[in-house]
Amino acid sequence: MTHARAHPNIALVKYWGKQDKPGNLPATPNLSITLDNLATDTVVSTHHQDEVWLNQKQVADQKIFRFLEELRSEFELAPIRIETSNNFPTGAGLASSASGFAALICAINQHADLGLNADLMSDWARRGSASAARSLFGGYVALVPPLWRAQPIAPASHWPLKTVVAITNETQKSISSSEGMERSRLTSDFYTPWLRGAGDDFAAAFDAINNKDFAALAEIAELSCLKMHSVMLTSLPTLSYWNPATLACMDAVRELRNQGTPVFFTVDAGPQVKAVCEPQHETRVSEVLTQVPGVIRTITCGLGNAAHIVEP
Ligand code: DP6
Image 1: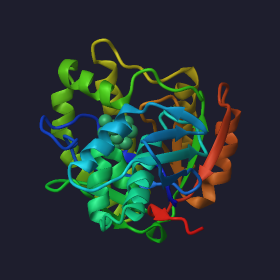
Image 2: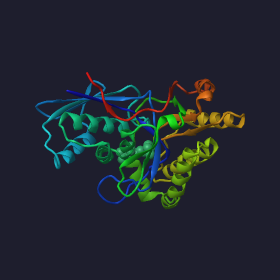
Image 3: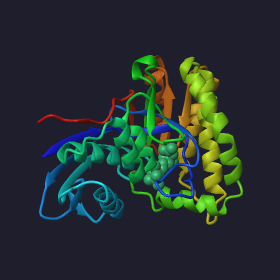
Image 4: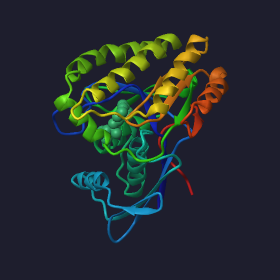
């Protein structure tokens, strides 16, 4: 029995769209921070058949079954039982597939003695879900060509930012990211400009992180998020992951900033808002977001560490 833990990550420069070739390769470079207080715990054990249990319920997760099939095309892997649980809402725009596939490959690697290093685990995690490649590492992480294996670009200690996650709806989204981004690629007029701008956005965020330039990072991260949502909204049929509370939280973050609190928001394929700030502003940001009508609760996270094995 092997137990692995991985943390979700949130992209500050987003991935939304895949290359038209095998390997689940993002169309654009992207960059994230790994969060500490949210976690996926995955236990893998030998079993007479493959089984997947998610949050104590057996599920027929086709993404995981396809992933196991692909692994078996390269490695000996006897049937396994996978028990995975998240300490946060699953499939609701909080990157549960990122921490999920990162924890899964980490557990299988140890359980079946595959001998993969973190680079190769990142490669495999990406095939399960591209954002998962980034959750193999802690701190600030980039997912870039040509190999599309994630690379840590700075440790958490470089610049220990905080993220206040405002939960506005705990239910699972109806359109997965994979399906949504494919729809965008095929139908949004904004998709090509989105691809064209991504390299510059990535470079600007990379520099801002290196220089710990909060205002520069805030500007580029919000812009990348809003460009991605513009692509989503202009897809046919439209993809709208926001609810009124999402918009109210975005306004509250802008208002805080206007009043002098350095903070920025980012939103993924779901209605939750993540507000990023320096540690001294965390309490104020969390107080304000908790008061926004429609916010169910907030969770504050620091920067998390890499996916790892949890010793019994
Ligand atoms: C909006 O990694 O979940 O969170 O590779 O198809 O599994 P697949 O997609 P996924 O997409 C993440 C999209 C995002 C932005 C991001 O994390 O970069």
